[in-house]
Picture: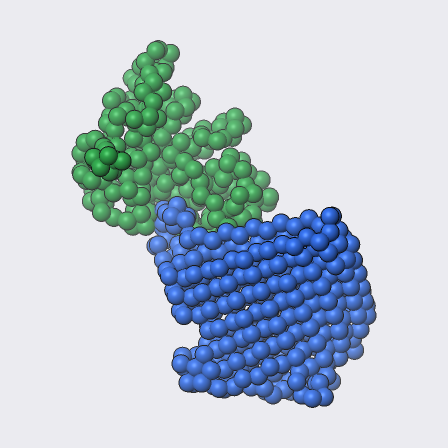
Length: 245
Length: 311
């Protein structure tokens, strides 16, 4: 279970004032939950994901994972405790292969066949990709799928996906939905947090959280929140209307 | 005609580092340890003879020799030893051979140890050569470990040569000069891997002349400069005929490391196409973060990134 208690995150602005990205935000994600976080661009969604992964440290508040305070824990410590984070923009590495990354993710020397199963799950022909370098020769969509494969290889208690659909084509998108559904079935006590604008991803959530202006503006079961977001003028305003802060 | 190879444990360890050899290799070889011949084998197609003035060896590979290899590792384990050695390779036409050189210095003493190896390659028509060279230093003495390799390559029509040159650890000072002259349709590929640490310095200079029509060269260096080390990469490709050349220097700097990259091109023919690329930078923060989210510590992430980069 992940708990954020009164979390705030401020950065110095150009005018030397503190700019608040996240404001006094509290959120609990229970075991086995599939939570989708949505809201306007610049509302603080990605920052929230980075705070959970430990890439950023909150300026106020506490973060608890399975009851333990991880507020000051490093990225590595959180990863070892069972938190995975799929980047919105996957990183390229000259010289590291897809196989290297999957093995690092799994934390053991997987056989090539084992590593290939993760690639097949994300719809990549494993044989063609396993020894490829994770460099500029791969397209954005390919990188994104490899990013998801590394997270699958970790199979941790909590996985945070930051806009997994960004840069993914329609065919892959179908596949992506299937991956999320499968993850949900297979890891019963684990939880998944996805940051997304996509209706079809919102549609498979247990719970939807809307974040705008650095704080939660709506939260509840999908059945309750989704109708409020879709098919009304509100949806556009909620998701896209406020623009960047 | 084989002579028994006699090496100490230190020498064996160094040979394993520089030539990936754990036992006496199959094929032709010449082992040199502390300026003396420590073992030699020749084959029906590959002859190795000492130069009359004792300055080095001649390696003669008969025309048509295929799938054979020559190993010529050099080990220095005495402190204070300095030597210059000339090794000439005469490779006949239509050959396909592997040449493995490499030099390791173990210096536990106070005096500097130095090996300056000058290799000259005469590559016959249509021959394919793969040349692998590793340099390595070890020992905790204050004496420096110095390697100054000079390499000259003369390539005849239709020949090709791939040079893999690696210096990853322990060499205090290096000045490398590699010159190549390419004839018609000849192709040269250079892959250099270099890492310097401590107070080391390394200079690598390439002068490649594309003299024949249709000749091409690809000179690629990847390097890492750590601690207070310094590197200079200076590669020039000259197009004197319709030809194509590419040089690339890609470097990571860490700590207080410094790198000077001087790629240069000279086109003396309207149909020579030359490209250079150079990039120097530290390890990107998001690369470290990504590997840390997979459970590595920052130091482990750094090591993995460097190991991959220099692979």
